[in-house]
Each structure stands twice: as structure tokens, then as C-alpha cells.
Length: 237
Image (cartoon, rainbow, N blue to C red; front, top):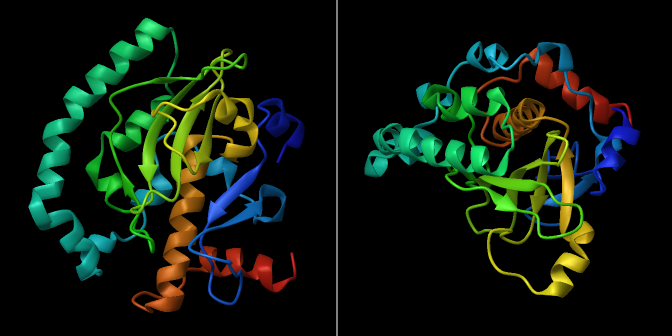
């Protein structure tokens, strides 16, 4: 990881995640882990089509609770019905604000088969964004909210800076809501840098969540890739 690149955005490089059983502990529902303490990501697999994720079995086929999460209240059909209008609204705002949202983001959010392959031990959920949130500081840029904790302990956003670079950040506050000057004066303590791209964020989110379920629920065996991820912690990193 290029930490000069990370610090160029100014947000502390922190992964907000759950425990991984005995391999990595957490003080609460979530903990903050320096990005430098995490296993590396397979960046050569990230080309925007998410084939690495499509090659995995879908939890819709083996996790009844997860299946019910999506089938209750016709959530799958609702996503399919609402996504086009929300995308249109988002794109219009992006054009008005002269920002470029990465194709990988839409490749993922437009494909419910991809969206419905990520389960969460804390019942986090995706929401197809329809708006762009201006960054009301001298740093400028924009946020796009796409992933939330079920109790709103933490929310995740795309951050697109004025040079059109896009990373994923997290905040314990809704950035779309009004905040006083004190919040934005200290926003670099409120917002953390989680991943250098949307796809790399999805990969780490997927592998960590699947590891948690497979260690705790034991509903599927760990893959060799997941064992390698855990081996990083076994080696004392």
C-alpha cells in the first residue's frame, strides 16, 4: 500500500471492522484497525467486473436467514424496481457537480446478484444512493453514501476529491445531515480512509464477513484464500 497516496487524502488510514474470532479481536461491535495492520488485497484481480466475487457461491443458496433478509418484503424486486431511478438521479447530480463516479461502482450496484452476495454479521446493508453530498470544507470533494450499519453506528461512503480520485471512507455520523462548524473543523477525526478503491473495499468486506460467518456459524468451509488471510494474523502481523 502506498501510504503517501493514502495520506494525500488527509483522512486517517483506518479499517472499521468486526472481530475475526480469535484471530483478531474487537473491543465492541466494530473496532478500528490501521490499514498497515491488515492483510494485503489481491489488486491484480480488480478490473471492475467483480468476477472474483461471481466465482464464489452465493449465500442465498446456503444461508436461510440471509435469504429471508432479501426475500421478505420483496426486497430483491424493490431493489430492481428502484435502482434505475436512483441511478438516474445520482448521475444527474454527478453531471451537475462535474464529478466522475467509477464504473466499478455502477457495475456492482446495478447487479443485484453481486449486491446479494455480501452478508454481514452486524446486519449492515447496501442502499442505492440517489444524491451526492458536498464536502463543506476547504478540502472540497463529494461523498456518496452506499453502505450502513443496521444501528447506524457507522456509515461508508465514496469520497471523490476535486481531482476525481475516488476512495472509500467511513464515518460514525451521517455526512448528509447538518453538522455544526465544530464537526467540520475536526472532520479528519470523524472520517477515516478505508480503501483505495470501491472494488478493493468490497473485496475486504466480503472476505472478512465470510470468514466471520464460517468461523462462527460454520455453515461453509473456509476457502484457501480465507485461510491465507487468517494466516497473516497467525504469523503475528
